[in-house]
Structures are given as structure tokens and as C-alpha cells.
Image (cartoon, rainbow, N blue to C red):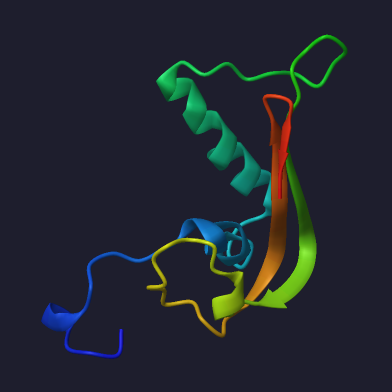
Amino acid sequence: KKLEFDLAKNGTIGLETAFGMLQNILPTEVIIKKLVTGKTIFGIQNYKIEIGQPACLSLFNPNCSWVFTNENILSKSKNTAFLGQTLKGKVYGIYNNNKLVL
């Protein structure tokens, strides 16, 4: 934040950078396990990739290096500490409930 703490807006975005930042400190397999097992807390079923099951997929490249800029922010909030950071791993979108979201 570029102002005194008590004058700055509350909160910061994190979802758009979470995977890329975590890739700097954890193996991809650990990140995936931690991010997908939480939905069972809310009673959401984990689907297997098999014929007849609904597709619920994340589309990502764990090896892609990229710099996080204002153009990457899709949230209404623009408050982030990660502008200009080089991230490893990029999420491109999801396929869920027969919808592709990029």
C-alpha cells in the first residue's frame, strides 16, 4: 500500500495470484491437494475423471512464468501487493457444470 495504513482501503485480492505465488514455495501436487479438498467441508462431491461423471476441471500450466500486472486483474478491487511480481504457474480457467470459464 502506498499510503498510511489507516488511510488505505481494506482488503487485498489474492485469488488471481494464489496459484502462482504458492508455486514459489510448494510443489504443484501439494497445492492441488490443498485447494481441492476444501470443498468437502461444504458437502461438495469430489468427482473422478471417468465416463458418465460431470467434468470439473481446472486448466493451468504449472511451468509458465509471467509478470502480474494491472491488465491481469479481473476483480473489481485493484488492491494487491503482487503487482510486478514474477509468478510461476498460470491458471487459464475452469470447466464446470458444462460451462467453460476462461
